[in-house]
Length: 345
Image 1 (cartoon, rainbow, N blue to C red):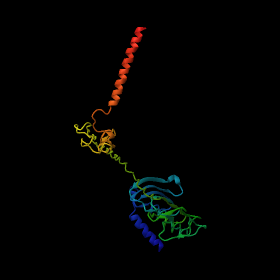
Image 2: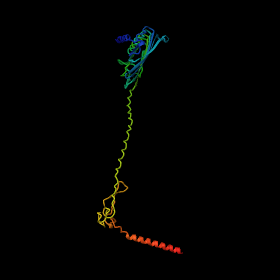
Image 3: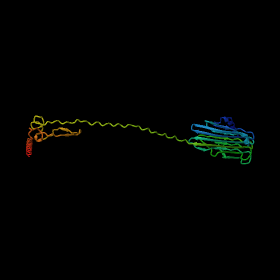
Image 4: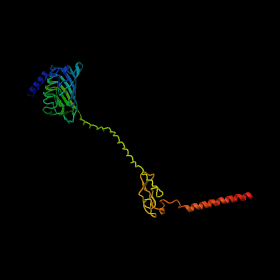
């Protein structure tokens, strides 16, 4: 029953198989259902690199397909090619239903490298391989696979199932999955190879697969730098000039006439002045000094002769005047006498 399902799968794969001229597609296929005449060799290899960074995605593929006589490397004719695509490769099918003839050889490898930029984790790849293989006689062990047993359904790697049957040598089915193979949720790649192959007695099946995921964590966007606004040079307010000091006109004291009763000045009883002959009073007249801001009151004596003011008849100094005249007359007389004495001598 399993063989019928496998055969149907292989037929479907072959019907939609993509030629080597259109390699870089999401599903790659080569070397399926070939070299099924006894004594033939089929050798095919895939190397796939996927690049995934958000919406940016691409892939590159290198393939090698070889055909010739079994166990005679010199007869192998190999055709290498490579291609690129803007799509990711997610499925690789090769070497299924091939080398089914007596003494045939099947040798195939797949190596997938995924370069992913995302915050994702990886888990170990699941494997389903070497089940119902190496039957029909021969020296045990007829199967040498790693890992084994491996029976995961819908595994990441499915290879070498129902292969190497019909008798033959020991360890005629040798299939391996690289122990460091991983898978991720953002890019799940499946490999199907070497299933239902190398059946015909004396045939050998040697296949290997590996899936490597290189994860680069997404770096947080840097915080935008804050550029300080350039300082605004606000001009200092101009000093307001102090208001000019108020100019006060100097106070000029009134002229007080001094004299007799006829001069209109301050004086005795007949002059109309203030006070009495023996009393001085404040006239209330303010005199302005050199300091324009300081006032000073000048007291002017008023009254009669006793106060030092007022008018007289001009004889208050008569005695002194007479004394002076007498001294001057005496001096003159002395000088005359002196001259006469000198003349006599």
